[in-house]
Image 1 (cartoon, rainbow, N blue to C red):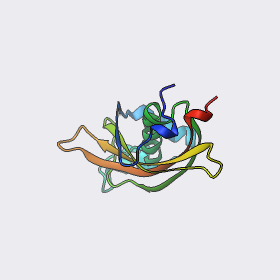
Image 2 (image 1 turned 60 degrees about the vertical axis):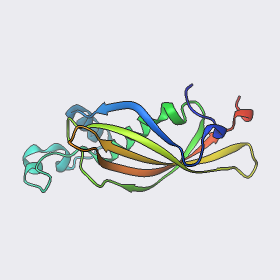
Image 3 (image 1 turned 120 degrees about the vertical axis):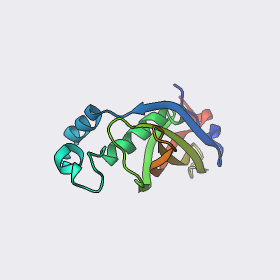
Image 4 (image 1 turned 120 degrees about the horizontal axis):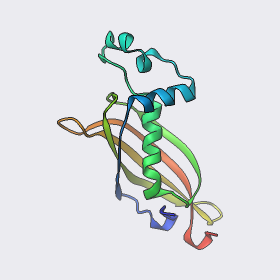
Length: 154
């Protein structure tokens, strides 16, 4: 277990997640297959080449899901009760096959539950493409989790 308990989160702190991922064509294809998303912008090279993006895009939901997964070890691995919400999701720039992403999470809010036995933590998650001249923001969202408190952990 590597996650943080409620008490370990500090509002305003930014967690730089060291684990990165280069997204392959296979990753994108498999995610689209599993979710039954057959959008040609993700899967059809000829179709996508004729769009404003000049090629196939990685499914935005995959980018977001991967970002959540890459943040788990540093945030809620083994200390979460439940994810409560994902809000304010934006994809300001495209992700392509072969792009490498990194993630950072900033704790924006925390409060105890009404019974005082757990805590609610909100983090603003930012996903950056790092294999370009400048890091480019490709996805951002707010993640709210119900977290165990250290004294109530079993």
